Length: 302
Image (cartoon, rainbow, N blue to C red; front, side, top):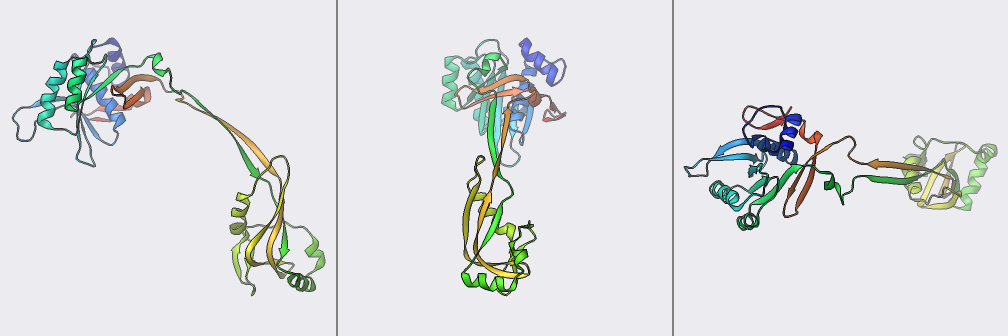
């Protein structure tokens, strides 16, 4: 067993005496559980194929809880490349048990013969080893995000009468001093009306989508006119006024937001990758130290 693997297992899983290679097998089981959190991952399981008499010791087995799926994993804590004999022997179990997937996992890699045989028989070859600083070369370690959020300050609205007659009738009934004044209104509790004076939707419901689409300039005020598709009525000085739209003016403010996305306080511990390049993952301390094993060898939360 490599000294680094033993140190990692003792620090993050459990400090215990185990036979040669077992800590690597159990470490691999935890890694596969990290990658398959919804599945049942078991270390050291004996299985037989349907109708077969031969029993096979499987280092790590994955059983999906929601679908009928089984994955078999053979682990080799070797300080040299795994040869064809290891993969060929494992294929004996694979051919009888017939799992949905099968992996061989080791530290240093595989010989050409092992890779060829595994490719022929559909066995995936993977590397699980201690993390090295050069593993981060060519990867994105931090993402700096900087953006500006432009917002509208309180706008000023002037209702535009639907027609001249609406305006004449309104001024004949309304208090001119009240009409000529500027006042603040709560858009959530102020309503548009129909011609008979029945309240319809509130101003917030109608105006917010309109203002959300208007251009915003943090340097100069924004002005313009918006016209509705039909006449709406508003209450002013106790009198209903039919309007076709409104003139608006507002200024805009801007907030600059900056943040950094990285791994925070996580410590990179292991690298797991499939040698065909389809998967490459760094395993961190937080991925490992939350798992343990129950009496049946299943990986469970501490």
